[in-house]
Amino acid sequence: MVIKKVGVIGCGLMGHGIVQVAAGGGSTVVALESEQRFLDAGLARIDKSLSKLAEKEVEKGKQTAENAKAWVAAVRGRISGTLDRKALADCDLVVEAIVEDLPTKLSLFKELGSICKPSTILASNTSSFPIAEMAEASGRPERVVGLHFFNPVQLMKLVEVVRTPKTSDEVFAAARAFGESCGKTPVACKDTPGFVVNRLLVPYMAQALSMLERGDASKEDIDAAMQLGCGYPMGPITLTDYVGLDTTLSIIQGWVKRFPSEPAFAVPRILEQKVKEGKLGRKSGEGFYKWEGDKKA
Ligand code: 3HC
Image 1 (tube, rainbow, N blue to C red):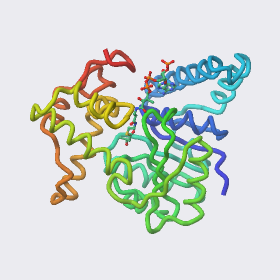
Image 2: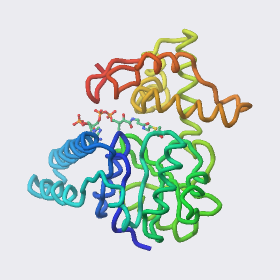
Image 3: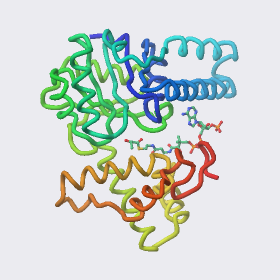
């Protein structure tokens, strides 16, 4: 099965990146948002990112300015935006990248099951919720997978392709091939909490926050230690700001609820406190650090 037309639901932090890499891989992409202003903001981010990537290709001498401009126009030309869910009906693949709230995702999958043509593959970019629950809600569990991208989607080279016991081989293979067409390396995952990356990454970030809360080291020193000692591109406190404190909190809270006896899953109080104060990280201009746009202030 070849994926030619893709729908992406949500054009925010993750969704806009998924729209962009899917179009970059040659698919025709429909970006769906709930309000025009969110759609406009997502498409503007795509324009900015495409220009940046094109500029870098020219700087490195990999492309002429003319070819880079033509590439941007071609990718952008494959993207359209809509507020109408029915526009997803004839997509070969629909990827959900909405807010991390399970009841909202379940009702969306139920609706997608009735809107989309029978062959449409439905995928979720969820960070940590069970794909199997969304699959059952859709009424077509054999055609549902997880496609978990990483932030920033345009630059991170991985996609986790998650299968439930009911995902068909054909659907899994098509989802994997789609990930490759987006320029990503796919890894196959089972439908376990956090799949591979977040199961390892989120407890590590939570440990770093507990360390900060105890006063074992400053945030700058914790970040410097992991960057310089382990070669990580970002330290864990900066990464929490980058991913979003609300997202990180909701992942851990979900796990604590589902797996109360798992010691690796514990909510750092400092994280809860910051979210209560509306300090959500890069997206709100302040988390553990202050941010000016995409850069730390
Ligand atoms: N599109 C195009 N260009 C972009 C971009 C985007 N979306 N984002 C950044 N860039 C560009 C920057 O503008 C910059 O260009 P310049 O050199 O001309 O100024 C260049 O890429 C490098 O960016 P930065 O200067 O900001 O800094 P870095 O060299 O540190 O690279 C990074 C940025 C790739 C984000 C790197 O820091 C990194 O890999 N960090 C770790 C990110 C990570 O771990 N992500 C996974 C999070 S977990 C997740 O997503 C799962 C979820 O479920 C929670």
